[in-house]
Length: 255
Image 1 (cartoon, one colour):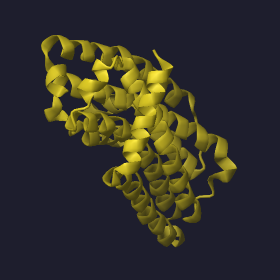
Image 2 (image 1 turned 120 degrees about the vertical axis):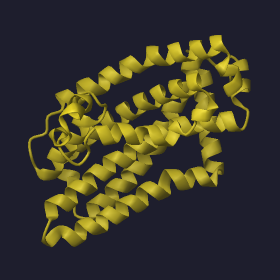
Image 3 (image 1 turned 180 degrees about the horizontal axis):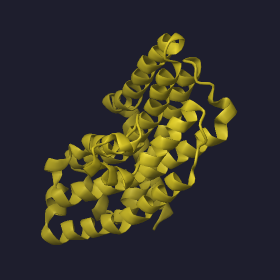
Image 4 (image 1 turned 60 degrees about the vertical axis):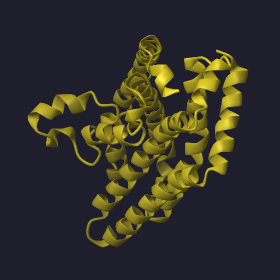
């Protein structure tokens, strides 16, 4: 990998995001307004259902953080597709790994301040997370790692399926989150869905976040193992999808 090309792509992405009003709205507006909504609910419910309100607030924070990190990667790719710059990037010598690696750096830079703002909203809504800051930081890091893995996987899916599946950029994560049982233990699912939930990317992250919100012991080895496994697994899948799309002509149609 060429670090210079990656940094140049990151710089280009940040310039595009800064100049794109709709991207700024998507990145900041929806996560922050969602957090404010659940923050007001947590404040309102403090007198009769404090734990329930706090649980929803905490899960919403990590859920929105996951969405911003994943969608930033995939929406930047789709902008290249929509505006016809994808072909020029690859003709310039950028490899498929450098291309997505740059988007990973961009997503990390963009999602970090969003997480900080959402955490501030959560703090002023009644979640005093400062005493548990190391655990919050660890769960945030695992959420970021998992979301970037999902972004790489979704990128591969779009590349091999074609531009008609660009909607996966903002819809695919919802299915993964739903099957990861965000607000409840996976045992609440019907029996046939429980094994599926057990291997979903966010299941143990949400479990750790729920325990954190409720003051229960937080175990990190399972979410760490799952996040690392997904992040390692998606790269060969992405490269395979990319080479398959190049071989069958879908990459040319996408670009």
